[in-house]
Amino acid sequence: LHPPPLSPPQCQGSGVSEGEYVTLGAHEVDDLTAAIGALRARRGGARLAVALWGRSMGAAAALLYAARDPRVAALVLDSPFASLPDLLVDLVAARRLPVPRALTRAALALMRRSVARRAGFDVGAVQPAAAAPGCFAPALFGAAPGDAFIPIAHTRRLVAAYAGDAACVEFEGDHNTVRPAGWYASGLAFLGAVLLGEGSGRGRAGPGAAAVAAATAATSSSSSSIPRPFA
Image (cartoon, rainbow, N blue to C red; front, side, top):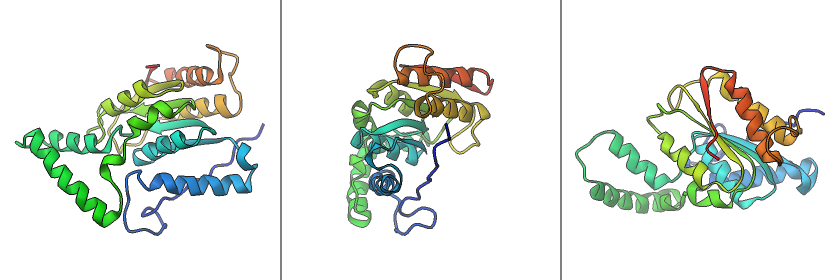
């Protein structure tokens, strides 16, 4: 078996792509739709098995896309947010400003209208947690308890809502720190189990459960990553 090809897409407003605004998943999911459609047109058509590995906004966009496309084979999601409006409230609260929560939400409502007018998307509609019950591909989540930008509670919320087989790996660091080797080992073991059938005979029945077991086994060998099989 040969490893699957890698195709890192660049969404609008990022890298060398055109676009004035990054939309935190709202339009990036459409970019993924176009990129995966082009990939399938070149390689194997609709039957092509596609796995998505995303971090932060990319993880949120990947989950939103998976809810649209039941042909997604697997997801590796590093520090996604569960709800963009809730994340914005959390960021204000983390600064410990003497601002009542009700006033914060009123200010966000004003910002929501401004963003819709300028950038053409609705902040309130970016809700990965609402999409998670419609996702059935095996998923490996990763998050850092010390993440001050996207609190780990967002990842735990997504895992709880996720319809398919899922687990979470916790690792040291913050939102932007280099991930430990154990996280990459667990992600690769997970994708190998799903896409290449490696270790498919172990653990509970079903490829999703076997993939989660493979990822957890790979992670347990690293002291810098702690497996947390929530599902």
